[in-house]
Amino acid sequence: MGEAGRPTAKPPARPTTLPGPAQHNAHGKKSKVVTITSGKGGVGKTTTTANLGVALARLGKKVVLIDADIGLRNLDVVMGLENRIVYDLVDIIEGRCKLRQALIKHKAFPDLYLIPAAQTRDKTAVTPADMVQLTDQLREEFDFILIDCPAGIERGFRNAIAPADMVLIVTNPEVSAVRDADRIIGLIEAENKGPGQLILNRVKADMVRRGEMLSPDDVVDILAIKIIGIVPEDENVIPASNSGVPVSLNENSRAGAAFRNIARRLNGEEVPITPLDGGGNILQRFVRFLVGSDSQ
Image 1 (cartoon, one colour):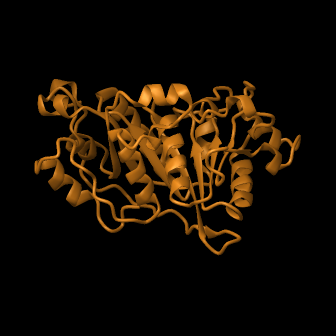
Image 2 (image 1 turned 45 degrees about the vertical axis):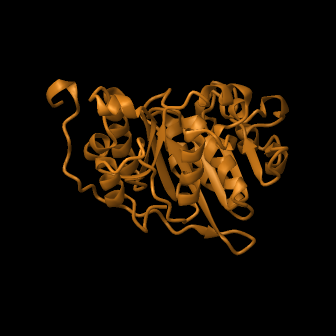
């Protein structure tokens, strides 16, 4: 730890293991499995998964979300689908239903589906090999498979990471959250899935300016990974999540716009990151350095 209780910055070079090539689905398009993870709970990982799923579907992509957090099912609530669950992830794995029976189709977006987590406390019901087999089946039909990874480093983490072509790490600009994200990045690299890309969530520009919050520069220096999006603090997010209508549908929300832009980057577009204060400050310079043609 450095002065003022901040983590000590690391050298900028992490060993880079590129994700495996995305497979093609039945339509001849590349299918990509993206795992969204975090070092701790409460940083917005599930909200991020839901918003990216909706945003990708609005781009015309066929998307399935998998809630891999067995025993702590939440993604269905954020998506407004909690009353339509019949079968879940464990039912598929244990053969109690066919894959298609467990897929919940979003009524507002015909190309968006959810596989909910089981409420069982038996976290050993699913293995990494099970997840690879499941996603291999889903690749045949879907353009994007987004996995909402359990927070922390339990078995569910390995399950969610196993089939990933890309890993997104969600964190907040707080010392404890960044420290936990750093640990998760190390585990991702140990699974040969790293280093992943960063989504910095709930950033408050005024606090950054006053030095009361870690800046994006600080976080990137500490974690030494590329950033794919900065999501500003936005009072619209919590009401949207509580109502089951992801904030990415709100055209007037800054957080919604940030999620939509991250989805476009996942889809291969070159979209610059909007500075938090709209000015030509150091954030713009750091963004130009980090976000290049290979940010996707």
